[in-house]
Amino acid sequence: MESHSDRLKRIRKLALLLTALSFMVVVISAYIRLNGAGLGCTGWPECYGQLLAGGPHPHTGAVRILHRVVASCSLLLGFYIAWQCQRPSPIQPVAGYAASILTLMILLTFVGLWSSDPHRAWTSFLNMLGGLGLVALSWRMVVAAGPDLAAPRPARATSVVLRAGLVALVLAIALGAMIGARFAATACMSTPSCAGVWWPVAEGWGALNPFAGVSAPAIAGDAGGVALHLLHRYCAAAAVLLLGIAGLRALAADSTRNLGRGLLGLLALEFALGGLTVVSGFSLWLAVGHSVCAAALLAVGAQLLGEAKAGAA
Image 1: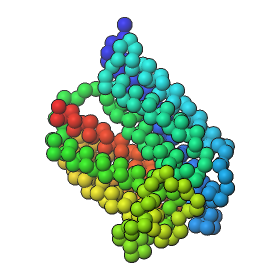
Image 2 (image 1 turned 45 degrees about the vertical axis):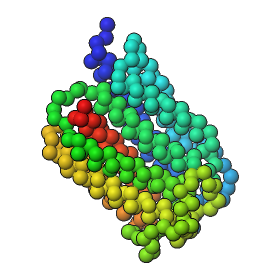
Image 3 (image 1 turned 45 degrees about the horizontal axis):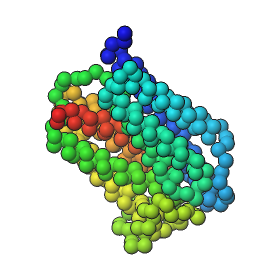
Image 4 (image 1 turned 90 degrees about the horizontal axis):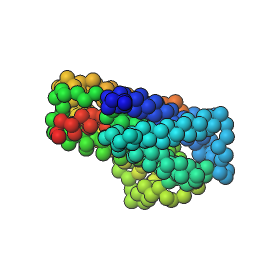
């Protein structure tokens, strides 16, 4: 009969594969979304939001087919991992993570039924957030299935700051996803302010509604697009400050020193990619890298939070 540790090792390997596939989905999705939106295209920004000029676009082309294949493999692997976590008896906490991942995958599958129409901001919005959520949950399952270290964990104060930083990060990611879903990148072409504007005007707050239809890309100075950019930057600044503090505190303990270094390194990289994306005129690959780095940052932050929870228990 298979031992408990051997079963966890097998689940850990499967979770590592699922994490890799989830990262691939995020990378390919970011490329499809941003390239289709016109970032990096010839004659940019005139061609930005070119998908909005036509009807629903078919899921064809090598990159789109690759996306569907990888996503389908991830879904099948998610079912298999959930089954492995349940037989012959449920094994926690990995069974809970597997159930959450499978639920999110099924939700995203249904969202995909409406994702062919770029005028629906909510489908792109949910797909972006869902992909990042899959990466974070998959990595948390990898960590949960790993060896249980008895080394000292972060103090509760670190946990509070880390939680606040992750909330700010999630808000920044959600606002960034809304910028992409509403084709609002060109609304603000400067940093740190938007052409001298530092706070959203009253008529710009309506852009936060993901269910509002999108008829055309936001032009420079568009109130809704400017609001999204400014709120995204303020949440990102809060995330950098709070997660930076949590990362520095994590350096104090041997058990979390590597996580702290990883967190601080990803924060610096994400901040640099965000600024370079704007000043470069929204280079396609810088924008893709910014999205992918956000997924990695969320995963590492979630792992450090798990360590903090263990220390508080």
